[in-house]
Amino acid sequence: MSEQIETTLNPFNPLDDMNLDAAQGPDLIMRPIENCARFNLRISIEQLKKAAAAFGMDIPDSVGSMSSRAEKYALCLGPDEWLLLAPQKSADEIITRFAKLAKNNSHSLVDVSHRTIGIEISGSLAQLALSAGCPLDLENMQIGRCTRTILDKAEIILMKLEQQRYRLEVIRSFAPYVWSFLEKSGQDARA
Amino acid sequence: MLLIDCPYCKEMRPEVEFSHAGEAHIDRPADPSSLSDEEWESFLFLRSNRAGICFERWYHIHGCGRYFNAVRNNVSEKFILTYPAGQKRPSDAQIKGALS
Image (cartoon, rainbow over all chains, first blue to last red; front, side, top):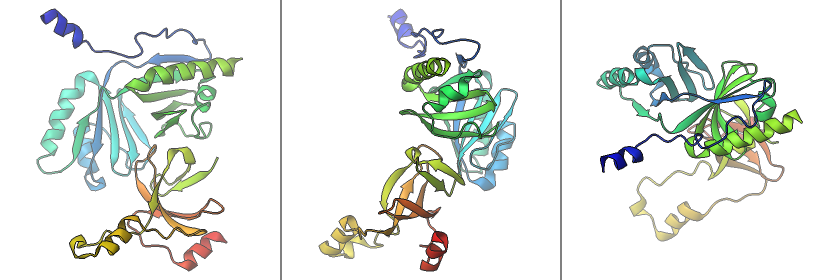
């Protein structure tokens, strides 16, 4: 019985069943990002400094900007909405610190670690592969910008890390679809 | 592709990220129980439905996740002005200014 429960509770990654090497090459490198802690933060902009202190790094206040330090990311997705990414091991500490903050500063911090799967896409074809489904002007998107947007039929969060390196946060059930879409558009770009 | 100026993102963003959300500047009656059936029907269902310049709510659902208002010509599909929700309806002069 206990064996059965353990099997049921095994974390499941929708990309595990896929052949992830099908479209890889030096011009297009895709990799799933290791599990990390993700938090959705809603707080008023006046209290943002306190949230930044609790998170342990600067949190940007203009929509579309992003800051990062030591594997931590803070993304400003909307005028009062942030996505915080951090290594799994620091999750408990972050939750404790925000719980302390909640005593005097009302805010909402929701653990959404398992809502999305991270995918990193890089190489000289990365931008072409993304542009096949994403209507944004990726060429002129500045490095260090982030946004929620659409990739073909799926909603994604897109982060531009370098000129040819992007990180996507994809809703788990859309991950196989997004992965195969990028594989296919990457192959098309190569042809 | 049609680009829409999101007043929260402060950027021109592609149309597919947005969703239309009905006519703008319709206030919910403060005391619904004092209204007649006809008045309540009017609040719920009757819209101006004009051809030409109209005031609409739009939702940047696949972006910043905010509702905002837009002045749009629904014949030519041109977005004339967009502004944050809660702001007053722009005056005729402002709309004219944005058009010229």
